[in-house]
Image 1: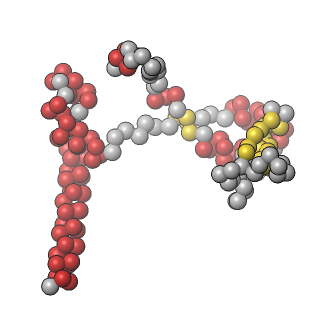
Image 2: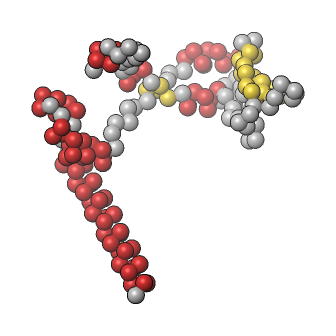
Length: 158
């Protein structure tokens, strides 16, 4: 597929493996504070200077005064140990989300017949029986609920 996509004139497709994505949430929570309430507006300009990497400078326009916000969080580590802890911090991989169960079932039941036979098991594999049963039960429950609502509406009209 990568080769096919790269044959297009204005497309350069680069395959990225799932292990290249990391969860930065824990790192940011540990070493940095959140934005103070009310400081993020759509028309604000933000910048950071390399001499003060934990400070964010912001202003609403060129004519407004610059506001400095310190984001260094010293609750979990002290300033003198910060660099060492940052370097030793281990990022966790973000697990691939995969397809929602309903989409897995739809690929198998609705679209598999349109895929060439040699690719069917790769592109539209059969989901586990538990997944198929779960999707069928959810659909059945929704249909029952919809029927109840419609019956109630009909009774009100008459």
